[in-house]
Amino acid sequence: MTNEDEPEATEPLRRLSDILLRPYLVRELLWCGACDVPWVPILFPPMSRYYVCTKKECSRPAMPARLTEHPVWSRFVRTHGTLAQGVPRERRHGVLKYELRRVVVRDGMVLRLEWWR
Ligand SMILES: [Zn+2]
Image (cartoon, rainbow, N blue to C red; front, side):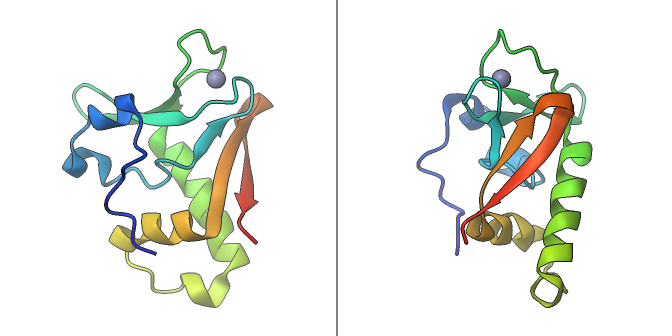
């Protein structure tokens, strides 16, 4: 359940260094429900973290990272109570990658979590 090497990373992802990517809890998990393509982390200067659709013409605005990550993690904790307890911040991305197939951004910026099982 390690995921530190990311061979499938898309080009926009590669533009951010590993260190800058680390706080993006739901990286490689967000999926655009409208365009059927991934969303990727971006950083607006100086340090505003966002996720955005990889299709430039997408009608959905970039989402502030915290507003995306908080609901996903809260829902994970609610679903996996004891497992989620005590997972340190730096391991949360790995845990989510292991449990979640993807998180689809739907109309009204509603997030639909798709579990592996
Ligand atoms: Zn899109």
